Length: 111
Image (spheres, rainbow, N blue to C red):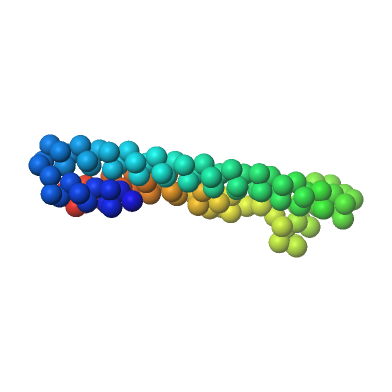
């Protein structure tokens, strides 16, 4: 989106092209923030519900210690690893990263 919005600046004077560039960066960052908020509003509640239901299921099936419940969750493939959570968070924040900082990086590489 940044490159698309920035494209008309090629036919303008350098001062106007700079203004178009700043507007394009602001718009792409705003779009990235909006879509990140949409993804977060879907991901976070779903992650909490799934974690709660998996814990509840482990509590119903295994009547033992927390370590035994965690072992059962791992055995049936319902355990939560920090890397899985990090991947989910990265996927939800990706539009913001792509809209702002990566767009500016593209500009610097083309510069």
